[in-house]
Image (cartoon, rainbow, N blue to C red; front, side, top):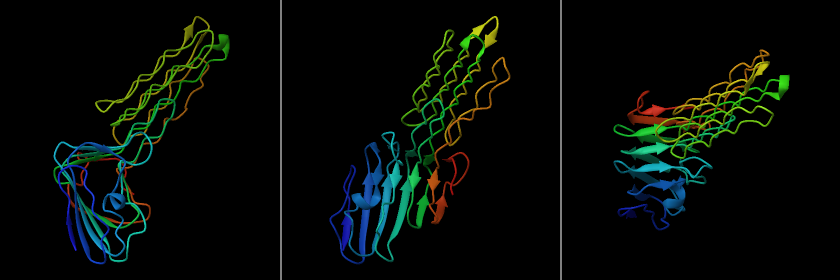
Length: 244
């Protein structure tokens, strides 16, 4: 059986053993599950997923941008041919975790020769408040992602710092400044992480307290104990974040 997807986010009918399935992603989409889009084939299947040039596969802020799905038949294969962008979401300020670009639950092959695969950046840490006069630290910035991390708010107090800024696809957010008086200063918030990078730690307050760490970054490809075979485009420019 051979199933050919048309333009758009295409799937297939349920096929029997030996199905050959081509899925073409021709419009921006979120949380793409390969098995679901392939029609959950009952037997073994050979699936190729093509992300067209300029297309963005991302996440709505929960879960990986693309997943293989589970319960594949024995002997099934998956090839991702990425001409576009597969990107995780950014972690929110105050230590939010960035999202994965691709999550696999079986061995796959990836041809990323002219595409980009990017884990979302972690959110920056919130600044440490100073006990003196309850001076508050600034909120951390959001991480870079297709859905940028939300701005971290400044903590309450008599002299609150400024909130961090939200991250975006263009850049991570910045950390807010600490509240400040003549007898105390809150620590500044950490900036959000860029693609595949953790959020920055907070600054030190006037009492020497700090060191809160930012949120961890999303993976470019989270292997979950499986293997990926690269056919091209596996370098630090086109792949941002861990592959492990």
